[in-house]
Length: 241
Ligand SMILES: [Zn+2]
Image (cartoon, rainbow, N blue to C red; front, top):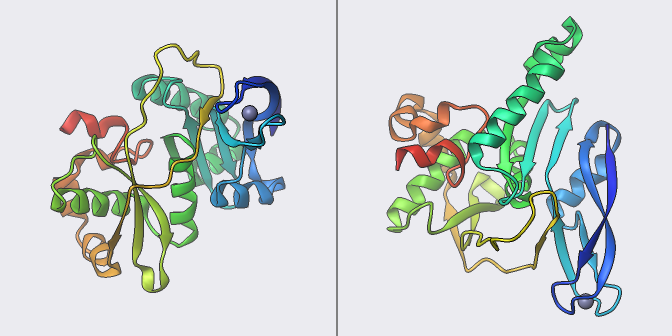
């Protein structure tokens, strides 16, 4: 079910208190425009009624698209550790699909299942899948790029900006998210727009080379065997550093 709730928030620029509408579940089959807004970055971006400054109000949400077979649980960086998030969403998924009637089981088996932190990571999955790309291979390509640049995935966060003509991957580079200590997990997280500090491009040939050798991915990025966390920057990838 698609559910929205009203949350009181404070404007990050002027402190004005107002209310915003926050989604708790997004079932896209009946809401195709939300997918477009997630991709163009306008989803849950609200302007302050006093000073007109816009910010993104990000909260936990489960995104499902039955037609495309997409199930993405988006946490905020303050809502849970990756271990807690993983076990929570595995339980929900099991209760909804795997332990359900045969029709639910059949549906569940078709889903690509992911847990991500933040809307930028959610957007990345949708953009890659739209382009017909495998997000596991893209994570391996990102890891290769960062290693070449002498950077670590805990120091620089790469997210797809665009898939260019010819299938080349344009990544935007961001600083890792810094969290305030006092943010309650159930409150929307206010994200003030920051431009990426850099862009990196991976040629399509690099993706093709990684795609041709799955055993090399398993060797270099063993955490990519997990189908829930397919993210260089979050989740079990940390166990291998
Ligand atoms: Zn304001």
